[in-house]
Image 1 (cartoon, rainbow, N blue to C red):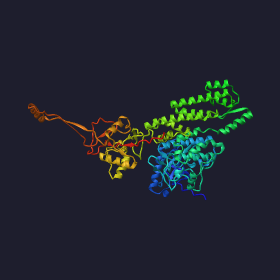
Image 2 (image 1 turned 180 degrees about the vertical axis):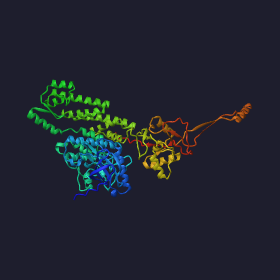
Image 3 (image 1 turned 135 degrees about the horizontal axis):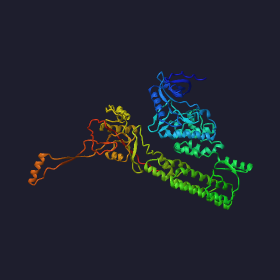
Image 4 (image 1 turned 30 degrees about the vertical axis):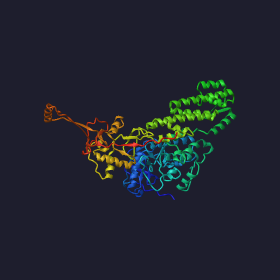
Length: 637
């Protein structure tokens, strides 16, 4: 029996034409935005079923989240508001290409590659902002008029930075068949759970079926744990390694980032080697043609002499798509000593080029040269020991690259090298440990953010034997301080009217700043405190504290204030009398004291201006924080 569509609501500024879909707590309608005369999709919260204030808050959070994401492969947002009966809605582009549900069947490999590349690019962007989608499935992959895939519906997403759950309707979050094993069991998830779901999509597009099935989520979860990843059809078997890693039970054995998964996708050949060899044999038998195996392009099977191939090697016409090339000539050549020497020479040339790229750490070249050399080495019949030696060389180079990034506590410079980890099978324990450690280290430009706290910059990198230190590069926000004040039963200070007073917490005493640091430590689970004078001055001198407005923040200690008290006229006179009889004259008195905590400018100070714990709130005083970064766990060697 067909479900009755919901009544058409009235949304000011829009003309609704038809009902499109129903979600966990909202309806989606096709409409036209009257002012701009453009088609849109309206997602409207079902107030009667939403469940009160919590559902409204979750819907608003979802709206803010989508507005935050701006990517060509993520469905954006046009507008937010209320319908005539007060229901919340947001408007997004209407994508006429429909969703992936109607296209789930064995698809052409080029189409699958293009679709997965777009999804991984979108997920890499979202994961970089700390957002995990948690509901990757065909219905949430939409297509525009150009066939570009776009990821939709972040309604059950979470922020991994603070585990904020944006929407939770029912007991199971996610879609049966597409959830990772840890998600199906209600365990904590991270970006690797989304990548598992992409692996399910890939398998479904390759075969037309799901890898694991069951009558409910529980049976699917059992199948994931007890059954091996199913085998692909022979004609698509060259995707099996990619699928096996994507659908690994343990997150640590999967692709660790969307970028790594996309790099592995790029390395899948266009056709399996077995099919290529059969094509070669048929072509050679029927038409006297040979198939260029690297590019699957047929060319005349003209036997080349030793001199011909020697000239091609000297001219660096080593591989397809160059025509003619030394590799194809040697594959077609007989097993004779002269040709065998040329096979060794060509493999040596390719290996030397690869090793030069590794030595220079030109990681974009390394991936290309490694693939070229490995394929040629296999086809030329070179011994496995040669390949093992090169893999060991790359393993050592990557360890050194990762060590540099770990020492700097900044993975930015090493990111071009991260996808190369997947080339080595198996990697050494030292490389695997460094790779896992590096993925936990932030990019310096991104900084560290705990539980909606201020962005932190790394002032001192942690080592394997000592903790590091992070310093807030902007003062505590007014919104976060208001949360503290509400929890502590305090009334936020009244500031002078200014734009800065709205965006950062100001007008706070030393006692309030100290208590806030304690409260935020409990909220974030990290040891936050006020900085010392030396710590803050070091951070400002290194240019870390440079994003906030010019203002002052409380320190946890104080600088000694040296005061010189010159003797007055009476004391000077008495001193001269004492001097006349051989005594000591009047001398200046020097005192050092600190009545309270010093406040320092967020952009540096000469120390001439101080404030103390006993002072009243001043409109230019805010809160800066520091926290320790735990010492690193040394990976195995």
